[in-house]
Image (cartoon, rainbow, N blue to C red; front, side, top):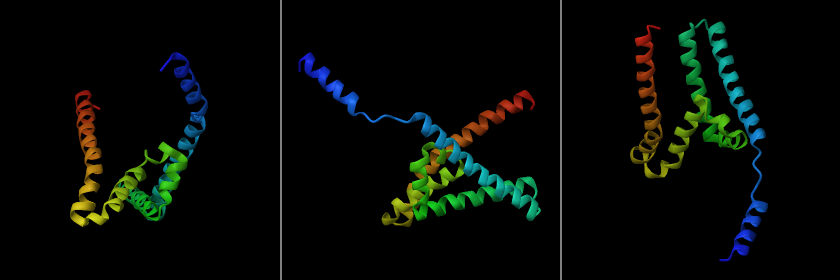
Length: 148
């Protein structure tokens, strides 16, 4: 190819390349992720005040409720639509983890329960668990050494 053709091809690529709306995407991710966290905090506060749970128990129950909501909305196909709108704003909270686990389970249910659902769910969960254990060890060691 000569230089004129290469230049023409590059020009067409630039003209047809879709413009990314980075600022708008960041705002949507921030607002939706914040909204998910706000809902979780409201649930935790209700658990503490209405059900007289201590802080630790309310946090644990609140997380379990949010995981349920994330899985339930994924099963209905709603969480994926929220994810298409908000992008990274839906993968950061615990509901994003629930979404990835439920999606893996739903995609592989035709392969059977053991070989399909469980195996593919733990492919996703395995990396998260490993990173969680390693980071907990590292930060726990740092805290211990610093006496915090």
